[in-house]
Length: 549
Image (cartoon, rainbow, N blue to C red; front, side, top):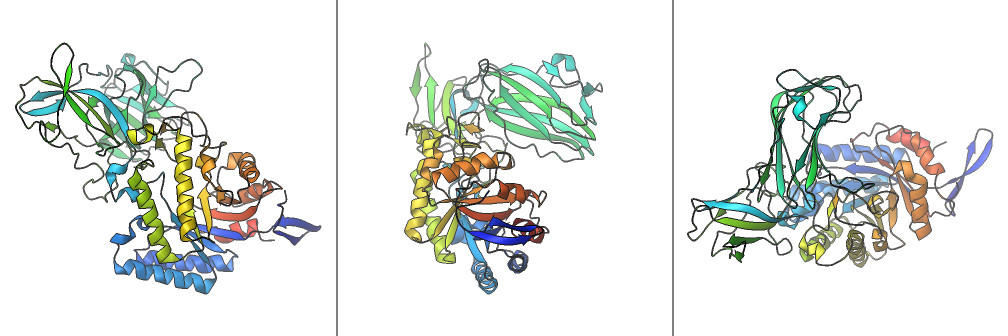
């Protein structure tokens, strides 16, 4: 298909054909600029990119979110990058606004994380300390995992060796075992299990799927954190933590959905209700402690008077890691009573907590005023540093939203909340850089991708309409290959310019399928070599396929 402008004529065998020109021919490069060797590699990449016909680098660095804390050496490295870009005629497009993968921004305040609610968890006072003591313990009858008959069901490739459950060479078949459990809604649960592997190729996972969905409804998934199992390891305990949300019936799975070869063994699975693990403390994620008195009545207690202030010291501050990083599991804090309470006194505790997604991703709460202050401050510092002609908004894969009171009190859908945040971010950049260009990833604004109603991770509600936060001149980097026609067509119809974010460490020739799908009426900006694996060996070949002969 041809675009409405930017046409060039290329001589090809058998004649001439019109092909869209590409004002943007970019390379995506997430780089830690604090490391000298990385700067050397980036400069070499820019030299190669210039020779291959590229025009710019989308430059991302986790440290862009905390420039005020960086040493002089970091800014000297930035100056080297800018000088090299000038020599090579390569435009630097810095990434800003990590809304979705927000850990870098949460360095400033880990309590700004979007948080899930726990309601009226039972704590019992013993020796002046309140600990989580649920009325009904959850038991996995097949916790030793050797007796498969105790489980609700299991796939045929899961067998017992008399000591544990084992999978050998699943060859692509599902290898799962599951137990249906009755839980209490809006409570925090901790799952532990021992895992052993030998040359295993696949991803062992713990999943919790809501089992109380209505007929025809998709079951909500509640666990999204990675177990981090190695291909070969001796028995190792792994953890998952989830919130039951509104569900009382949950199917708990231990298994592998993508295994090929090798051996995987499971044993000693357990689940328990826990309290205050990764508890978030801010006004928009309120915490309350009430004491049961008589006849089911409760009386509020006062923090600081009746009990010590509640803080989880490891929430967003794990040992040996940066602030803004969160652990899947650690021992939670207890409630230290400040005045005497008899042993056995029952407390009802409501609070909000963080859960991690995949390898530690945490979303910032976009409804907190301080979040917008941090975004505004980042944009100002970045513009002072780079004086770029364009910036790339990093809104991407927002997997937890509209769960805490900061969001819920607005009485907006997730789509409306996201649109409001995007609109504010666009305004910030336009005020700083009135003539500059603005880019954004497509997925959270694309109804053919993640911007729709349905079960998107831990987003409560409908993401449709999020695109209303994008001005018509915001350039959208489309990256959903399977729906490339629909996605680019949608943004073209809105009037947004389109950039193709292609490659993804796959066949370089696939970019032609992208370009052939560009709608005739699209304002087509060009393409971006997009690698998640820091794989830059195909930069020249990609350019040759995208705009070469």
